[in-house]
Image (cartoon, rainbow, N blue to C red; front, side):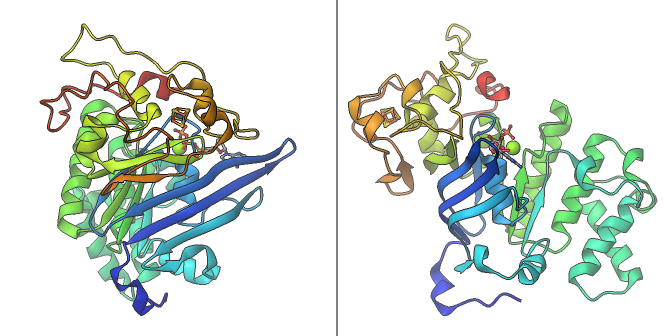
Length: 361
Ligand SMILES: Nc1ncnc2c1ncn2[C@@H]1O[C@H](COP(=O)(O)OP(=O)(O)OP(=O)(O)O)[C@@H](O)[C@H]1O
Ligand code: SF4
Ligand SMILES: [Mg+2]
C-alpha cells in the first residue's frame, strides 16, 4: 500500500500542481490538460465546470491514471494525494489505490458495467478485489450497498444483468461499485447528464447524502452550474486545458473574477429573470493543437488588452480560497453578471434552470 510521509499530515487530500496531459496525433500534440492547478480538501465537494473539450474528463482520468498511454502522456506536473505524487507510483500500487482510496463514476454506466455479469456479481467482485471476505460476505455487503444507494428489491436485483435495469438504476449500481470500498475521493464525471431530470435530482441527492454519511471528498464534473450551486462547496472553472478560476461557490456566483466565468454565467437562462436573455459567449473554444498565445481566452474576451496576447496570466490568489488566471482580476474591472445580484447569498436551483447552452455542444 501507499505510504504516507509525515510531511503529508497537513496536506489537502488532493493537490494537483501544473498537470500536463498531452495526446500525440499526426498533427502534433493535443494539449488537453496544460497546467492544471486544483486543490480538494478532505470531505469537500469540488465542482469542475467548463465547455465541452476543455479537459475536464482528461483531468479526472489523469488523477486515477486511466488516460490511454499512448496516445496520451503525462507531460508534467504532480498529483499529490496525501502528499504522495500519484504520477510516480508504480502501476501495481496505483491499481490498489484505484477503487480503494479513489474511485470514479462515469457518465455512461453501460460502458463501465460488464454486460455478461450480473450487477450483484460485479459489485461483489469489486468488494473482493480490495477486501478479504468470503463470497457469501461479499454478497451480503453488496445487497446492503444496493439498499444504501436506493435500489429497491435489493436481493432480487443482485441477479439482474445491466440491460435489465433502467439508466437510473444502472447509475446506482455504478455508485455502489464506487462506494464498495468507502473511498476518500470519489470522482464523478457527469454522473447525471444521461438521465432525465427527476432521476438526475435523485442521484444528486443520493451523492449528497452519501457524502455526508461517509465524509468522502467528491470531484464533481458537470456542465451544469445549477448542479454546482446545489452540491459544491468550491468550484473550479476550466478553459482550454487550464483552471482559470477557483473559489468557494457563493463567491464564484456573487463575485466572479474571470471574464470566462462571467461569460458562462451570462449564458445561463434565468427562470426568475425572463427579461434578462441569456447571452452565449461569442466565438468558439480554441484548437488545443495550437492554443492562442498569452491568455488562451483572449480571442473571445471582451476585456482583453495588449498584454493579454503576449503574457500568459498565472493563477493568482486574489482572496483566501479565491484564485483567478486573469491579468485584471481583483481590480474591479468586470461588470457583474446578471446572475450575481447583491442580495443573492446563494444561487437556488430555481434561479439556475440549466447549464450554459453554449457549453452543451
Ligand atoms: N485519446 C485522445 N486522443 C486525442 N485527443 C484526445 C483524446 N482524449 C481526449 N482528447 C482531447 O482532449 C481534449 C479534452 O477532452 P475532455 O474529454 O477532457 O473534454 P471535457 O472537458 O471532458 O469535454 P466534455 O464536456 O465534452 O466531456 C479534447 O480536445 C479531446 O479531443
Ligand atoms: S487576461 Fe486578458 S484576455 Fe485573459 S481573461 Fe483576463 S482580460 Fe481577458
Ligand atoms: Mg468529459
